[in-house]
Image 1: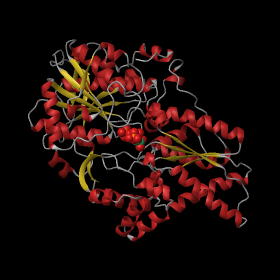
Image 2 (image 1 turned 30 degrees about the vertical axis):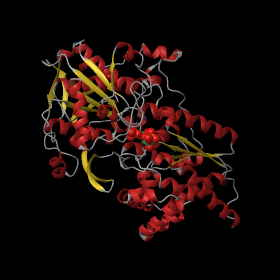
Image 3 (image 1 turned 90 degrees about the vertical axis):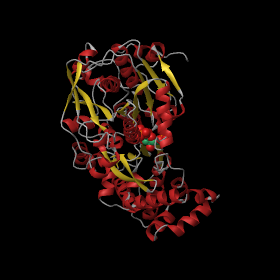
Length: 552
Ligand code: FBP
């Protein structure tokens, strides 16, 4: 291992806080089961596909005895999908729960994401390995991957690995797609009467894996605080030099939670919320007009500078572009071999233009060539277009610039528009987890172990009342099928966990909407600064603005 930084050493000594019910002897934690549940939509279809694991009750931990705790068992853990700060602490929570229960139990880490369980690539996590990663960012303890578990062969390979190492439970730490994998694997293992349980943990910086029971996904807190520090720094620069517009694209493949949270933390001049664009059925030209309006207003006050936040997923939420992408997805999935055989971009474009409907063909043709090429790049293994690779921030700069130049020629704009593009995504995914994420993740992992020790499968670990101090949090588990519906993926209907988008009637969006016109013209930037790990509660132990508004 490389030399340790002073912060790394100091963070090893941080003891994550646990909710009161999880403190003390692990054998005295029991599960209280609620009423049976239903999936969020498409109940009949989801029930049909998950006959063994559908509709289980919500579980909440209470003090009481757990006869299973204390048994010697082996568990496996998978880190799946994009990195998110706190993943190592989830593993630490599972590890400590398991070892507190019986020091002879073993935890195996599957290497490189779901591929590890399929291919039997794993490593035993022992004290030395675990201690080297506590409270640190990254997923490097065992690595991650985006492989999808979906074929019978893959399930059989996974089952064989578990049997070989006598693994009786698998924790999948992942986002909506990875937890969908988890639900399907749990159902398969149950059908096989294997006795192997599967429990998920809600991970993703995007913040779109949430519902009444999952108040936030882990990593969102640290990632948004990291981006907000950077945005605050850029705002300072912009307000000092007064000569640039900064267009900052922020990660969040679909939902705009990250952009909204960062806007609440930094008060930029403009923040586009994809979900609003979709509801208002805005065209690309209208989005460009909205941005140009703010630039024009500020220029009229002599302010030829500003900061605009652009959510990564925007492009898919502009209905005309969304329709285009969905047609491209279907065409590229259904004619995959033919499409790949078209060797040049020009040939691909020509073929697609014949296949697309009139509107989509028009929209596609009106986009700059670089964006057209980016729209045709490989899909991820779940069939999603890789929006992190589409340069929406540059597209907007180009189109706004063209509009303003035209207005200048017509004598309707005499300001200046010098814009710079930024993309903040990878910068925040492996940061040292904030105290919130350190505590939350450790609790999620500890809870995952307790769910498994009660023999529950097809569940996701959850923690309630996160706006309160950690000792008052309410941990438990809810069935994965509860969060599922049927959606088109790779050209066919599949059961998936429903993504939670920004709600336009939710408190965080309303708070932003009430202020944005003022922030557009006033330069009301705020500078959150770096994440603090030590110091007074109001500086180092605060949840996100989103959580505060949602739980107010
Ligand atoms: P997850 O949903 O797997 O947590 O990933 C989130 C994310 O960071 C998105 O914000 C982004 O679009 C995507 O991953 C980038 O993926 P990759 O790491 O494969 O480039």
